[in-house]
Every structure is written in C-alpha cells, then in structure tokens.
Image 1: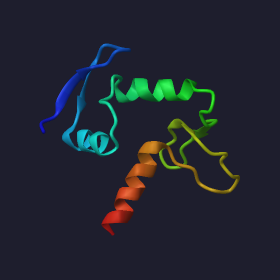
Image 2: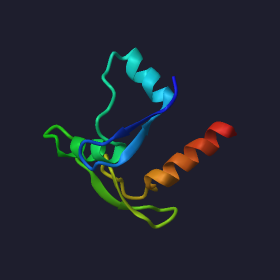
Image 3: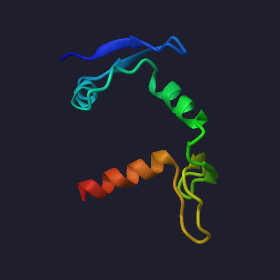
Image 4: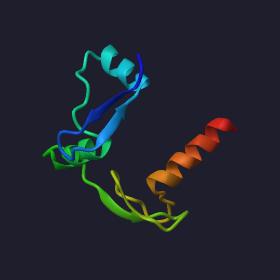
Length: 93
C-alpha cells in the first residue's frame, strides 16, 4: 500500500495518509480521514466533551503551549516538542 495524498475538506491542503496510518485505520475498520491533522485537532477541540487545555510556558525552551492537565507548582512542565524529544531520548537509553 503506497502513501495516499488526500485533499482536506476543511482547509483544502493536501496531506499524506501514510501506509502505516492506512494499516491502523483498516485494522480498526475506520474510513480514511477527510481532514488533515491540524483540522482534525481543531475540530476535536470544539467538541463539548473536549478536555480543558491549560496555557503553559515550557520550562525547557520557553515556548508557549497548551496542555490537557493542570500544571502543579514546583513540577517542571514541557511543551509537546520538548516532551516528545525527552521521551525519544529515554527510549534510546
């Protein structure tokens, strides 16, 4: 199964539906996505049952971001990029 290019029905941008994603969607008996990842995220955030997001400033890089949990005083909080980077370093070690 090669990667498929799909036009997003919301923003009209072309996005790639990778072979790995196709396999996951097939295993779960789901239809291919009609929206790109960014538009899917925006749509999910507008749902009534969407989790509340909290504004943070990353303790590592200083970037502003939103997280789905209430940050605790005295505990470091990371943006998505720094969190993903720290997880990938932990897996390699």
